[in-house]
Image (tube, rainbow, N blue to C red):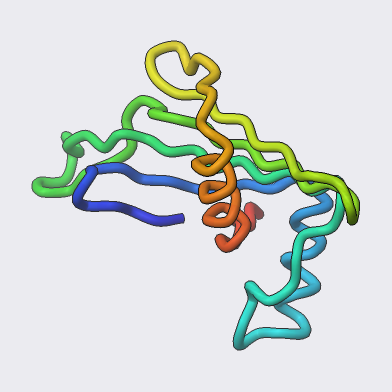
Length: 118
């Protein structure tokens, strides 16, 4: 999870079971550097970004409001290309970034560690 005070956004990365199994294996073997191994084929990551709003219960605090965008990365088998999809704006309409933008965004997302939910 991260917060960007410049753009006033909050984001959280979620992963399916395949992605989370890899995260658990990383934390057991590479506690000092959890981003060293790639995700296995079939792993799906979803980065959800929200616009922040003022918290009505805590002066000066900001909390997530409406979703701004959702980015999905699906990891493919060796030799195949991963897929990237982005939904943004009112109604979360599918966005079609350039190949370069998609590659940069995928690299950023794959470098993050998903949230572990209890």
